[in-house]
Length: 195
Ligand SMILES: N[C@@H](CCC(=O)N[C@@H](CS)C(=O)NCC(=O)O)C(=O)O
Image 1: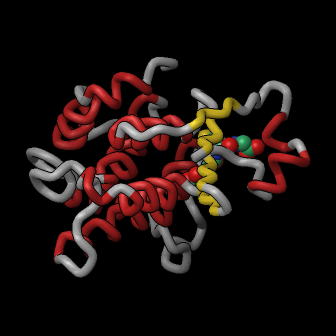
Image 2: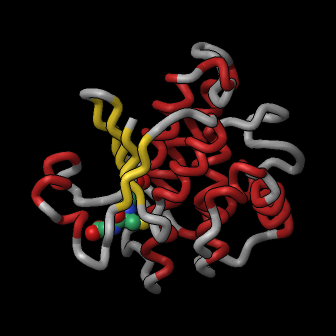
C-alpha cells in the first residue's frame, strides 16, 4: 500500500490510523511548497489534488473517512471496526459520515467567519446544532463506540483534535477530555509530531 502524505495535512489522521493498525506500507511525501499535489501524475491518482490518498494495488481511496473505513475492514483482526450488521456498526457509520458531511463543512466555513445563509437547506445546518450534536456524540468515558477504540475515533476524534489545535472551536469539558484521551494513545503520539 502507498500512503500519499504531508505532515501538515489531514493525512496526519490516516497516518495515525496506519500506526494504530501497525501495518506495512510505503509513505510518499507530497510537497505542497512545490505544488506536487497538482502535478499531472498526482492528479491522475486524485483529480482533487488533495491529500491523503491511499493506493492499494489497483484500488485508489481518497477522503480521510473512506481511507480509515477501508483500512479497518481490510484488517478485521485489528478490531478497529465493529462487525457488519451489528448495532455498533450503525453508530460507526454515523460517526464516519457525520464527520465528513457535517462537521467538516460547518467548521471550515466557521473558521473563515462564515455561516451558510440557508442552514435549513445546507446539509450541515448551523454551528449551534452541529456543536450540540458533537456534544451528544462525544463519549464521557472510553471511545465513540464504548470500550472498543475504532476508526470512528480516528475520524471523529481526529477532526475534533485538529479543530482544537487550530482554534476552530472552544471545546466543552467533555470534548476536551475525550480529545485528551486520544492524545495519550501511543499511535497518536507517533504521528502528531509536526504540531
Ligand atoms: N475531504 C478531504 C479533504 C482533504 C484536504 O482538504 N486536504 C488538504 C490538506 S489538509 C489538501 O490536500 N489541500 C491541497 C489543495 O487543496 O490544493 C478528506 O477528507 O480527505
